[in-house]
Length: 322
Image 1 (cartoon, helix red, strand yellow):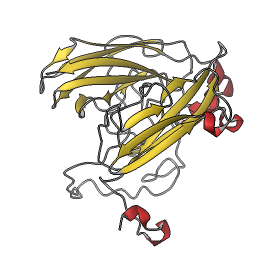
Image 2: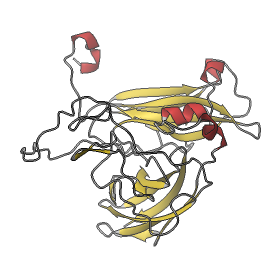
Image 3: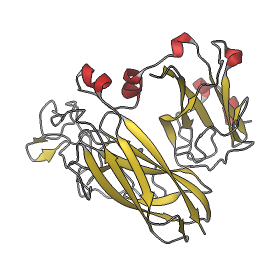
Image 4: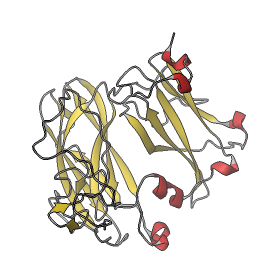
């Protein structure tokens, strides 16, 4: 029996490292200033470790019409919101049968997302900011006045051999919004999280639990200033990107210290609050450098996501690996 056939109420609480499918997600549609309409998509990779490469083709396509509409072909674990956008086809209607369908097949399962112009699915920048985990604690006016950062990505050369590091450069420009946020405040008391709940963290001398394949943790942008993060968007396999997290332009203590213990913002990693920009003031301009190393030959698309702490801008690079 396939475990998908077992009712959830009868299943023990469990997480699957591999063997699960990929669910494409329709996030909603948005009106553009020029009168056009944009459809937004994300995905859920139900695996906690497996990162499948599913090339555009019979197992990863749009219909009707052009099967390649810029969708990802390399899927990181778990949920990823607002990954890419597609212009709505001319004449698209408000009925389900008028929809544009994204289909992904993996591990013996076929999943689809249907995008159509149902009025309840209309969203705006406010919706996007809230659902990408950015913008909390900021004035409502900034959500609409802030313009997305401008991003230019480049590689030192268009081809590289497997196992050879390749330097990547990201140049970001931005307006003066959003403004600076103060450090997060906790509820008080050493040994508590910022919500005032006991941290329940092991002592510093506790032995580490062996984990040969660490779970993927999705990086998050800096709360202040400009930051950038590189991912594999398409390709025959993954890549080692250094640093693996968002690089930030403004060094910041994510939360205020309490006594002898610093309480970190949820999701922050050790060392992730240091500035790694090589140029720029960090607020209106920043330049970052990173390296990527491939283990499998083929053609890869790398995508950089630039953040101004509220909005994200993508930029792609194509690298030939021999």
